[in-house]
Amino acid sequence: MNDATKWYEFRINLPVEAVDDVSAQLSGNFYGGSLALELPVNLAEESATVSPAGTAILKGYICPGTAAEDHVEAVERALWHLRQTGVPITYSVRSIAPEEWLTAWRSFFRPVCIERICVVPGWESSEDTGAPIKIAIEPGMAFGTGLHPTTQLCLLLLQQVPIAGTCCLDLGTGTGILAIAAARLGASRVLALDIDPVAVDAARQNVARNGVEGRVEVREGTLPVAEAFDLAAVNLSSSYFIESSHLLKGALRDGGLAIASGVAEERLDEVLVALAAAGFRPDRLERKDGWVAILARAG
Ligand code: SAH
Image 1 (tube, rainbow, N blue to C red):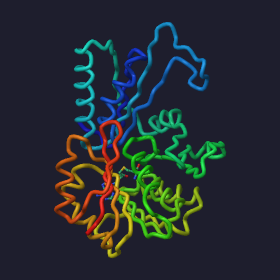
Image 2 (tube, rainbow, N blue to C red; image 1 turned 60 degrees about the vertical axis):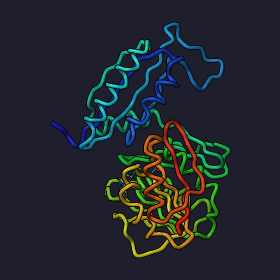
Image 3 (cartoon, helix red, strand yellow; image 1 turned 180 degrees about the vertical axis):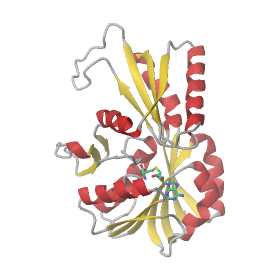
């Protein structure tokens, strides 16, 4: 039986030298959750040495929802295949309550810097990152800590487009991270939409925490909207763009830009076809860990 509030936690033991490969292969399965690393060393010390066992623990979280059990199976299958290729992996998986996930997640949330933007946990917001733009995020139960590669790609592209004075849309705002980034980069107005009321709550709090409530409006909902934006940041999924690119096109003024992220490398061609059919021209692609973000121009 699927319990819509349960998170799943994977605890994967593996040799330290296999961590990069294995996490790259698994990260796609933890979309909506996270994959975090626990090493038997103090990562803060450069001279840190790995324990004699040389073992790392990867922890991955799968968020609640109807597809959660499918994701659990997909991860188990991927781990099985990795074991067949000779990587000595052992793992356990268990379901955990949302509060437990929150505590676990907090212990893994570290500042992440993408060019000029550093995302820091809300409870460490006084930390000096030296970054020109610091964004403090308290994830609550919402998705969007800046750690997921698809979010990082959006943060990267947001810094590569003309944004000062623009009107922006953040579709699927999660914690509000991209809306806050757009405002901090100079957008004059940002509409942040999410269909999940929990995300809307978290986003409103984060928007206030970062002092951009004057320029960012957070609303429960989705496209279509009765406005035309200069720029849209959309970190959803390949399927969303395949099915709904026309809605995205309808939300942009002629010549407006869309950042379409959350696209899996293996579905890139399908997404590009759908974007073209809706009237977008791709401008640039950015890639990370099997994910692609497309910068596309409307009209
Ligand atoms: N923008 C954040 C969060 C992305 S996760 C980031 O880049 O990190 C996707 C978010 O989109 C979730 O909070 C989910 O509730 C929301 N969402 C999913 N489908 C949506 C849709 N069709 N319209 C609006 N929001 C949607």
